[in-house]
Length: 447
Image (tube, one colour):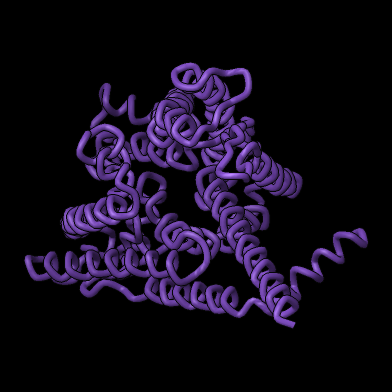
């Protein structure tokens, strides 16, 4: 039973949402754009044999193809016009973000503000097209070389098929990039994240059905299925707690007198999250580890035997070497990406420029060292949290108990995007309530 205070807050939020016409239009625009995306994931690329492709994907779907198919919402498995999804755009954005922290010219653009951000976004778009062209060509060549029991995955291989596949897949990626930007500008939430989120959520019922089917056939016991569901709920709870957790550093601003009035003197907080790097470390770690496995499955290395075959076997899901490397890469990328997205020296300089200081810490280098000290210890907790969340589902997937869509990376994306979208909706509701109060005060003052 909800308490009276919670019921009153819910009723107030519902009434505020019903009156917020701009927020409702943003929500409807977001839903319409995501429906268009989901329809596109069922429009196939011309010249593909779906039966042979389905057979081949069952053989090679456990590697990097399975991860890309998860991000594309099943479009890669069906080889549709959105098979590449927004992954080229995400890769390009991450590279531009890394360059803005390393290359001086990109760093200067980043410091220019809005004009510099527009230029960096334009560079990311050009890089997205380049990545989409390269990946679509590689995918077309790979499809031509795929041979199943019923023949080739391509009906009529050749230059025309490669060209049409490149144009179709690149156009689909560019269209999704535009849709994501439109959702960010005219909808609610981050458009690119919501596209990936909708693909994962749309396939979660199928993943749950697969798990229940294993119980029906006797491959898994009923109690083990209940244990899996309890673990998923527990993982979601831990994800929500850790994604919301933050260390708030008190920042004080001095008082200053302008004329006869005194300004400033207020205190604020600088929030530092436990998981500053987000879902980037698991994605990078999975890509690096699953890419050799995918190549090995296409080249039949394991059938030839030898050292490479033994190495590929040890890099399989659930193997000790895979677990150790996966955890080590997640921890490494957690520290690396945190160092890229948060610069303690730059934050300290900005505080000093506006007169802010941390009580008990001298401005300048000492403040930067303090930020680095706190962030390093938070990142240790965040890195081990990411490694634990991702290793548990990997162990269950190796036993065949959990489908790919219930993995740690997908659950992290679902939780982080849900929290971000809810917080943005709440911000719009609060802004709408403030606008209503301002209008009422103006009417009263006019009377």
